[in-house]
Length: 133
Image (cartoon, rainbow, N blue to C red; front, top):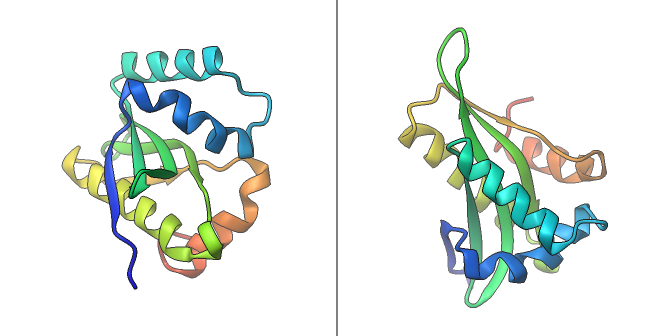
C-alpha cells in the first residue's frame, strides 16, 4: 500500500508535536529554542513544511529564498524525517515538496544543508536522484 503523505505549512499548534522529531538530530533542542527558530525564519520570509501520514508528523523542513548572483536559490537549512520502517518514500516526498516550493518561489535551484549526523540521509537522497551530487 502506498502511503498517503500530506504536505502543508507547519502550524503553530504543531510545533510541540514536531519537537521530538527535531530532537532526533538536535537532542539539545528545547521548545523555546525551536519556537525562536520558527519566529526568526518567518521573519526572514521563510517557512516550514510538515509531512504527515494520517495524524503523524514524519518530516519537517525549513526553507528561505536567498538572492544569488545568477538567480534566487531556495535554501533548506533544516531537513529531518522519521524514516518509518526504513521507507525511502518519506524523505523523497519531503525533497519533492522542497522542489515544488522552489518552483513556486521562482528559484533556480534548491540548496539542502544537512547536520553532520545526517550523512546517510543525504547519501540516500542523492542515490534516489532527489539531490544533486
